Length: 319
Ligand code: FO1
Image 1 (cartoon, rainbow, N blue to C red):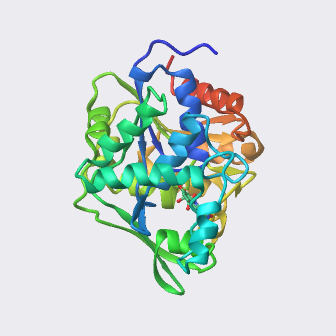
Image 2 (cartoon, rainbow, N blue to C red):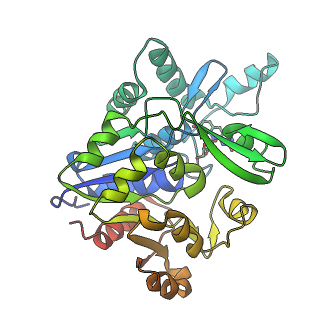
């Protein structure tokens, strides 16, 4: 596969799953020195003494070719013997830590406890896995997404995994913000004179991209940029492929369409990439002043990921 070799730096903002796939696609077509991937850490949590960073891990596993495409999270060829044993010891078993995945949480947790920053630990782990591109947390300060539901306020993973997204969502907040500054990697990327485009990956805008935008100064920095800020819609045929986005849009009073995605991002984005199946809505989006590109946004293979990455870069005018 030919890498795109000139045309400035690209900053991608990513959550897990869909975002991670596009991040991996971008890394397949842009050389390491021209790409920074800043990842949501609002889903992170402390579990059984370990610090789990699901979106960083989804991005890292996708870039290392270790992701389980079927399940959508965690490592491929996984086994679950630790969970069986944990269960037999009467410990919490609602959050599944695979045997291979567990190594990541152990490697990260002891180093964080020893005083390394999440940025330093992430750089070390990506390097060990042979990833040359920069994968940085949105912040080194803890930010934790919390969801207000008809069952009260829930920590994100309690809402998402333990309660299987069943409670009705009323509001979302990112505890730790304001007050959490961008990681050095994110701050540097935002300030680069050669920054050519910002890509908002096709992750859940409310749960995965909003926490990044809530980091001190990030929203303002994006608004002041003169470069294309291009979001890839997570909707296909008006529906999210995975996760609670469609249900949440409904519960928060939005229609399940790209109009809602565009309205949510507002002036933050100059371009929206939508799936070809949603072409009907393109006219209205364009009338609102947005540049709209139709593409195949379903990513079943690494070829799909690279193809969508190329389409996004072309739409952003980046070579
Ligand atoms: N998602 C689940 O639906 N069930 C799980 O048991 C689960 C475990 C898990 C372990 C490590 C990890 O990195 C991710 C894990 N996820 C699990 C996915 C995760 O909760 C979500 O995909 C993200 O937080 C949303 O982007």
